[in-house]
Amino acid sequence: SVPAAILSALAAAARGGVLFKGGSALESLAEVETFAFDKTGTLTTGRAEVTGLASVIPEGALLALLAGLEDQSEHPLAEAIRRRAAAEGIAARPMRDVVNAPSEGISGREAGSGRRFWAGNARMAERMGARIADAGVRTLAKTAETVVYAGEGDRLLGAVTVADRPRATSARALTALRGAGVGRLVMMTGDRRAVGLRIGAELGFAPQDIHADLLPEDKVALVGTLAAGGRVAFVGDGVNDAAALARSDVGIAMGVAGSEVALQAADVALLSEDLARLAAAHRLARRTRGVIR
Ligand code: ADP
Ligand code: MG
Image (cartoon, rainbow, N blue to C red; front, side, top):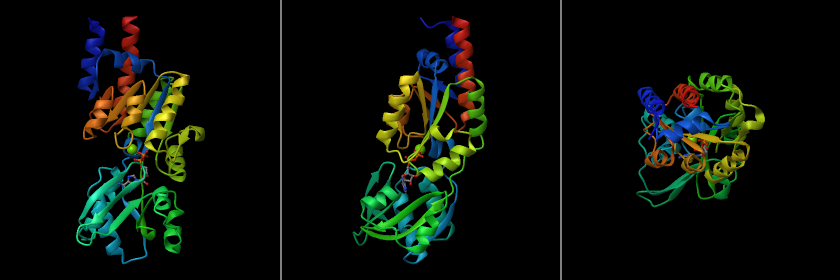
């Protein structure tokens, strides 16, 4: 049977918005050597503003295309783009046959014409054979912000930048974990290195612990590598990181708004998008370990 100390700790955690899938998850959390964090949507809101736009076609047309594609995406960046189009009174161009390219972007056919458009990062642009030659787009891409390129086949149509910002609660939670003597804190992102380094530095990650340009399978592999140094917890929002949640010793899914897949892959669910809850749960796990030993 489950010791009373564990049951009462699980109940206390639940009151604080942290659900453990059983007592062993609580015990594992106390033993974690490395915490690995997904960036977009986990450490950051991913829902900040579109801060820049450069377009080869009329700006309204670019936003209409982007909004049409991102209408069908659950990625946190998609919301920023949809909001920008809405704020400018631009209607999304309906898209069909939409295909998600995890950690790269999205593509789909314009409902009326059947023409295929895409939106995504530099890797996606490269895969489409689109050269980033336009001077305006190149200038935009020099900022340390997340860039979403858009194109039709190998024709680059433009790009927007999205200012991804750390959540107000992230820095404090990381400080608490460091204070608790957790061996290592690592950031993993599918975003490009410039953005990873900027946000990582803001949150106090050591440069060698910031990993960028990762595909979902790279996150899984990296969790495996880190596991050689002890128990690993992966904290993610479930967008492009459900496999990493599953691979880690303690998968921690943030936000129940997150996908069903994330909840299934995880051992722990944070009901709110607040990493302070994680730090509190970690303290509780450590205390409970002390009690039952
Ligand atoms: P993270 O690992 O930081 O959470 P992701 O792996 O989810 O980031 O995404 C990596 C990158 O892929 C994003 O920074 C973005 O450039 C691109 N991307 C992913 N999904 C989309 C989308 N729906 N629209 C545009 N770009 C996207
Ligand atoms: Mg993410």
